Amino acid sequence: MIPSSFPLTEHINVTSGAHILYTYDQLDFYIENAVAFIQSGLQLGQHILYVDNKDRSGIVMDKLKELGYGHSIPNIKYMNSSEFYMVSEIFTARKVLQKFTDLLKPLLDSGIPIRAWGHVDWKDDSIIDEELTAYECECDDAANRLGVLAVCAFSSIKLSASLHLRLMESHEYIMTDKQLTRSSLYNRTGNTVIFPSLSEHTKIQDEMDLYKKKLDFVQVISHEVRNPLTVIKAYASMLLNETESLQLNAGAVKKLSDIADYVAVIDNEIAHILNTEQMLSSEALWQTSEIPPLPILQEVVAMMETKARTQNIQLNYCVNLSGQETMNSNATGLRLIISNLLSNAVKYSYEDSQVRFQADCSDGMLRIEIEDQGVGMSLEQQENLYRKYEKMNVDKSGQGIGLFMVKKLVDHFGGDIHISSEVGRGTLARVGLPLKN
Image (cartoon, rainbow, N blue to C red; front, top):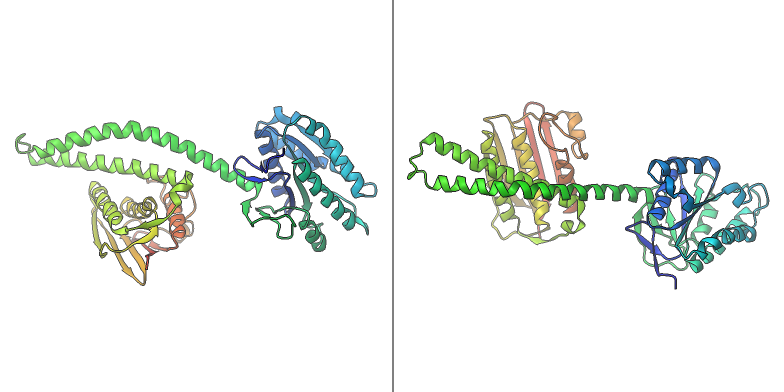
């Protein structure tokens, strides 16, 4: 029995026997999507039927070899599209469908799942629209009946609007260079669902896999570093509690206090990196629930006060919340927003300067202001604030991912953020997050 669902990629299932209409605008995107489609099939151990012209197929095959799939080329059954679609002859739906089934038969006999990618090429004549429509209807029936995942690719430049609409009736899914969705005109369609295109999904998945590998690494480092830090912190606290009996002078007490502060800062930085990587690699941590913001603000401000003290910076704060306020948010996400902005304010401040933090409520919003008297930013830097891996100051530590995460989280929680700055005169960040009524 043919399964009810079929893996399009490792993480996206489509209906078994799915028939996808792909209309592309740019050749580069076409190549990326063809490569991603074939690559996913090879990863899943499937047979591939690939129909395209020599030029495009040559580029696709070269890219697959660059990705390390040279040894898998025998699993790809290739046919020239001009021959398959009889470009030099009269296109007839019956003859082309017969070629399709003839090519599939030996692959079907193996019992291994099959996916097919065909770039539809034809010469213009008066009956081609009728024959193409008939062929795609028959192809849809065959794909459904045989459980073959099939993509029919058309250049949007060559495809007329009327033919496009008719083809949407015989394809369950519609794909563009950037998006994959169910066809609203398909007579067997279900609920509308939208995915990234194949190449976009591959990029997203590669990035997610990278984040997960980084997270594994960070968790190992976290375990190895935080254990000795805990011991150092415990001993420093014990000594501070016994300063009188140990007859320690003021200088020694100051040094012990500095040790305790630095240990706390290092431990917090590790937790911050770990939380950031978890947010980047786990959808579960983006889920929202009703939370009180006051305890989180107090926790982050207390930690940042310690960090500021290690850098000879004074953190002045005023939190005007009653404690009864709640918001639809995520505790880890809210903590990351505040700690990123406050940490940046401290990091980019001049020594012996001040950082101001204020939080209050107005018009149903939690309003937060963070202002420093530090190095500030140029207009060019401000234009690139929320780009991933865009560091505002190469002389300071960090991966340039903090403000990227802040913007994503603020948007996710339905809030707004505005940052203004002037070189040499500091930065002001304003954040608004909606409260529960």
